[in-house]
Amino acid sequence: MIKIKIEKPFKLNDTVTCGQIFRFFPLDDGSFDIVIKDRVINVHMEDNYLCVSSNKEEKLKEVVMDYFDLNNDYGVMNEFLIKSDEKIKPAVEFSSGLMMIKQDPFETVMSYIISANNGVPQIASALNNIAKNYGKKVIFNNKEYFLFPQYKDLKDVSLEDYRNCKVGFRDKYLKSMVDKLNNNELDLEEFYSLDTNVALDKFMQNVGIGPKVASCILLFAYQKYDVFPIDTWVKKVMKNDYEIEGEKNIREFATKTYGKYSGIAIQYLFNYGRNK
Image (tube, rainbow, N blue to C red):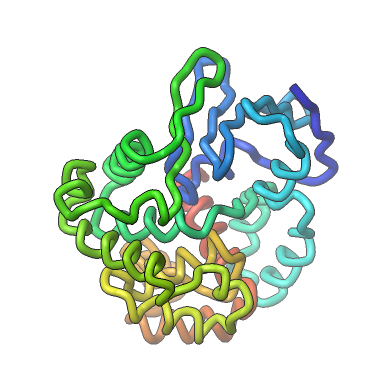
C-alpha cells in the first residue's frame, strides 16, 4: 500500500460515485475497488492521505494522481465559475473536492454508447459482462476482476455476442465503433488534439453517438471541459433555477456563462442537486 498526501480539497466518495465511471465496487470497510485501464486499485482516505493498493504496483502513485486529476488546480476553475455566475456559488462550494476522473478513451466510448436510454446498474452490468467475456482476468485481494478489453480484443465479436452481454439495441452501435477502430477509420488518440466543436462533430458522425454521449466522452476521457452534456436533469435545473428552456438556449447560456469550464459546472450542479 502507498499513502499519497492530499494537499487540496478531495472528496473521494463524491468523485467515484457521481456518475463519471461505472466499474467501481464499494466495500464494507468504506473503500472502493476500481477497475482502471491496466490494473485494479483499492482506495480509501485516512485523514488527508489517499491510501492505495493494487495488483500492479508499477508507477502506482503517478497512475493514481493522474486518474483522479490530482495535479490540476480546481481553485482556479472554481473562482472562474463563481465570478461568471453568482447563482452557482453554493454548488461550487458544496462540491469542492469533486474531481474529474481521467478515463481510458475506448472504455469511455463504449460506456457512454451503452448509457443511452439506460440505467446505471444496467450500464455497469453490460460493461462487466463485456470485460468478463473478453478482458484479462485479475485476482486482487482474493476477488476476481476483469480489465476492460481494447478494441483489438473485440475484433471478432458479433452482434449476437454483444446482445449476450445485455447491451440491448446498442449492439450495432458498439460493433460499428469497434469495426471502425480496427479498420483504422477512426483514431481515438486524435481527439486529444482536436478543437472541441470539431471533436463533437466527428464523434457524432458515428451511429449511436448524439450530442450528450459525445459531450460525456469528451469530458470524461479527453478533459475537454468546455462541453455541457444536456439530459432531462439538466433541463430541469435550467428551467427551475435559471428559467431557461430548450437545448439550444441552454447550450448558449452555458457557453456564454461558463465557457471553458462548462463541464465542471454541470458536474457541480448535478452533485449539489443530488447530495445537498
